[in-house]
Image (cartoon, rainbow over all chains, first blue to last red; front, side, top):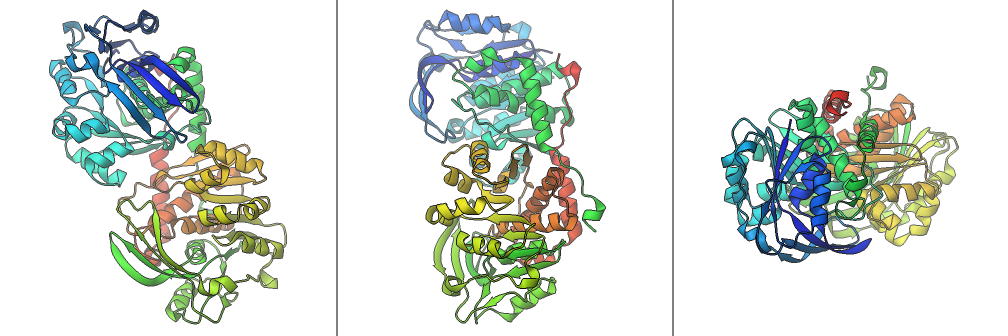
Length: 308
Length: 308
């Protein structure tokens, strides 16, 4: 099954303890689409400016990502500049130049409106709603967001979560959105607001999946290589939707696997800047890390003799 | 098999968003011994002052904890006063009155020196070393510590970790001790220093176990009830050693189970102040939560058809 991804396309300037890079490929749609392309036929919608380098389009095309629905807008591409300090859990923004992002008005071409699996990567929730309005049901729609939208467009997010199958948020975002430090409680409240399920990304602490009946805790890979965390959440979301589309199985059992696949892809992505690690990544490495994590979480039931 | 626990005995005054309690039963040895007593015959060594309430001794005795080796010292009992704010991840100390703790010099009675399972709960590492010096090998020794000792007695901790089978630290402590924000790297470095294994307690994010060959990630219980986190780490350690002693099985497979048993007991302990929840706790509740967590972590291998 095929995947549609809508989000931002960026040129990032990033400094971490491991390097300082200028105008490298980034953006929520880019990270997500590249991760999804490992599994499924993927179309990416996002805005590029007149200065967007052809080499990046060539790379995305080489991954068989459909770029026909990109929005080419006259003006400079969206740019984000930031840095990470020693612990790398928190991105610090130095400068955001929205540029052409302010005139991005996503249009889904007629032939793509029935794409079965849709990931609305981090973007203004009003635009995410506009995309949904163009889609033909039934789809499986997953949406990501960020603290900026929680602070500035909370009401719009309330509308959005009623229209998606799964929200993806990081732990800080869901705490902030639901106004409680308790993640299980926050997840329950979010679902009560009309969201069918939620995935909570916890970075080095793994990820959680909640719906009305299910709770799943996925561990993280024991990551010693960590050069640049930018795009980890987008990579998670893209791999999650790509794997679901590939397997075309939305059972709770398979969603568990998809959460782990997403975590594994994100664990590779942070090993280098931009999409550099993804360019070298082989599917067999993903599979090996998936199985390694499976081994790290197994524990057996209690023997009666150890207990009574 | 039996368990020996050495640590502090305290009267705590604690304020959380859910209540404000004065001079309630606490201390690292108390939380650990009560948790251990659910599984194994447990002896507790620690100092009590002239003002230590008889009702607390009666409660500990009612759990079949051997109190014959308590150190009764003339003077007031150790007191800690602290509070937790809304997110309850961080204890804030208001006042610490060491009182008789400063003259505590632990003596292990001759008949207890060959106790097979030993938990050195949080205490001055010099005293922890003094206890080890009195023990007769072979034992399985687990030691806990805290940031205060990492800051003030790092060299002593270096000696200690060479003499124990497992160190138990929380995530902040191991980062501080090994001077890296990366937990897997910190764990590897700790093991290189001569420690046979390490458990990293991550509170709401579960716990990790590392040794030279193994990595195990245990999830946390999805806790919505959280009244007072005091003693969660000590409860974890006590339940861990108690369960190991009960099963008398130190295989990596069983250590995984013991980590989950420890997490489960800690998840009950935080549901009320002091030892109140432990007083009401039934072993069948522990077992049910263990099985619930087992269900929350399972995921299946990837189907070839979902992958190739």
